[in-house]
Image (cartoon, rainbow, N blue to C red; front, side):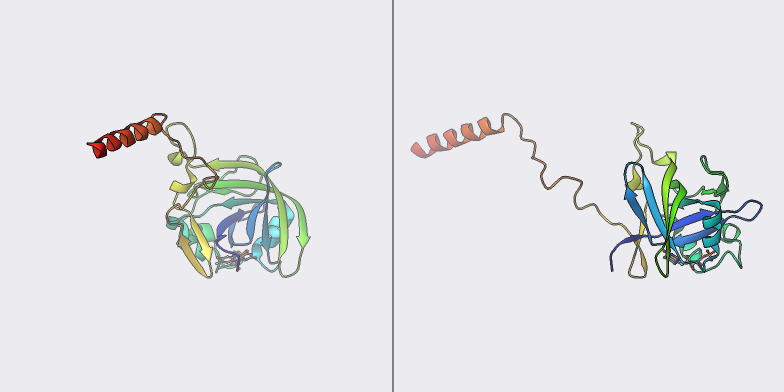
Length: 201
Ligand SMILES: Cc1cc2nc3c(=O)[nH]c(=O)nc-3n(C[C@H](O)[C@H](O)[C@H](O)COP(=O)(O)O)c2cc1C
């Protein structure tokens, strides 16, 4: 019941074989420095052995436009279908990995190398270091800053894919002091004096 979850498309590949995509909701950031993430995957998934053997995967963030493909990659297995061909998504060579491709259509590709596998139970957790991140330049502003919230990200909550809606605050806003114009206090005092004079008349 922790919500919302990311529903990310994780791409992986073995040498000489078609690349694959698995949709994953058990995914998250676990450390800032060094940058580390996890994904938890059931051992029966086709992707599981690929990631276990190659020790590589890419987390590709999903958007409203990619929702259909995200769902498809979460209900069909790479054992039976070529998910890149079926979804029309494009595998591109990753910058820092040997096998796993990035998904070209995703606005953010997080390239990961597995450090540890924790066999927790139904799911095994791949603990990984982030070795590279690429972003779609269409979302860079004039100062070269990436605007993630403009990409149309989607979250997964209680069985539904949800768009993110409006911002209702930003980091630290609860303690940020409101900027006051320096002369505003003086202006208030002037207005008070004017009103007092008017009342005296
Ligand atoms: C929204 C969504 C989230 C999912 N999250 C996970 C997950 O966190 N771990 C997992 O092992 N499978 C998860 N699945 C199921 C796999 O994506 C699914 O079984 C997929 O067909 C496996 O593909 P593969 O056999 O090609 O590896 C999820 C499916 C959906 C639709």
